[in-house]
Image 1 (cartoon, rainbow, N blue to C red):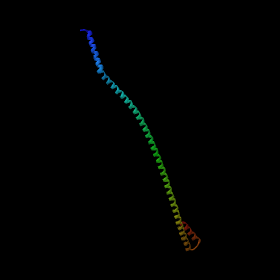
Image 2: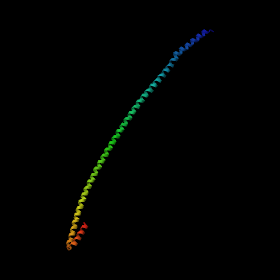
Image 3: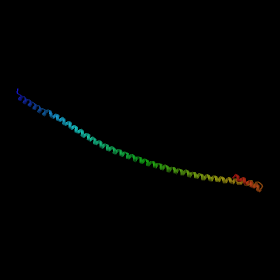
Image 4: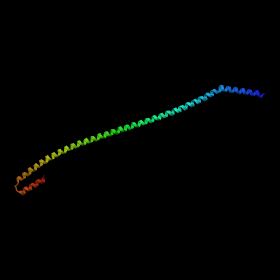
Length: 156
């Protein structure tokens, strides 16, 4: 056996296997590696896109929260203004009602005073008539007259 011939045959067999592997085995292997690289690249791009969308969504949420807070503040301001208007109206209504009651009370006091004066005047008139009739029924002397006047004054 010749080492050279064996070496050449083994070399040819090696190159034949390498050619077969390169022609039939290597392309599917490389295609699988390239597909894997492509999927990894797509995943990274999708992750970056998702991060960008998340940032955009966070910005939109922050804007919506800001708008909602501003709207809530406006609603609170309007409610406060409405409450102040209601309080002012209630205060005005209370003052007007108090003025009506005061006016009615003053009118009633004036009427009661007029009635009391009329009654007092009638009573004084009755007492004067009663006193005059007592004076006329008795004898006219200064002591009795003085006593009757004191008694009339006490009754008035």
